[in-house]
Length: 371
Figure 1 (tube, rainbow, N blue to C red):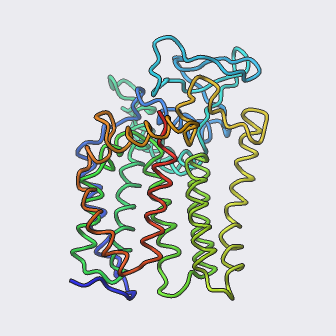
Figure 2: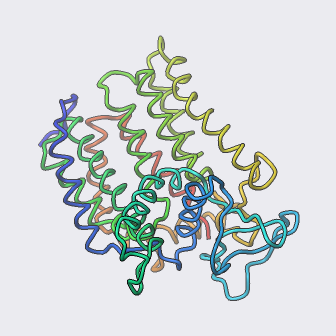
């Protein structure tokens, strides 16, 4: 089968059916809550709670576990017994008694608000829930419903992957295989049980790709603006991770946009990003007193600073991310070895898009190659 070189109309029924199937698969392993042991996910859930319940970004905890005080936001060592790669620090405050803030972005917490509200409606709809039923209360129902966020996002990402393959002219079996391999044969499935931000970032990248690669011609100003919107959401979710992706897409538009529309494309691309950066600056100012203060690096979590600061750290990080027994991507998703065969075929069909995807992969590896 020779690679296609055209764009085809997309009937969304087939990709949506694939997404529904994957979502039902994810429900088989859905934990039914936001696991307290996953501090990143728990902290982002606390922001959702604060936004809905108190219209604030300061978080609260009944137990106070993982809440630390750091006067004047001076860096502190990790608390005793904490793991270097999972410090279990949910929030920090400048003085005892708070207010306490997390270092995580607003994006995912905002997107999860409808599910949290729905959980509150369901939890309050039955007199037995929270009124005498052992082990069940409204808060647990809210956590369970909000926890469906990552399964939904991952299934939607598979829908976009399948639709993009169809748009590029590949047959349905290729779109189906691509979506199923992503959804069932990579860490995408385990991540559906965590409420971590990686599924959200993945959806944003696929959305950005689809926005500027949907047209058979050069990127359009509208497509560039939609791409910027998706990347703006990624920035709002995790700023440090997503800045590299913004650079990659910006370089692609600078090279590939038609000369007559180049600046219109770049302006459309930059508009949503500027809005998001202003929101992020205000968010940082409200939390830590400075527009550039994100909270990272304050409590011994230097492993979370992207990218690594030394060549040795870069090498160790790349090896650890791709091949180590702890989190080696090729070890846990060996289907990725097939990229050595599939990428050249993709490049023959769509050279610019293939190089864009490769650059995004390189940016992801560089951004996460931290020890």
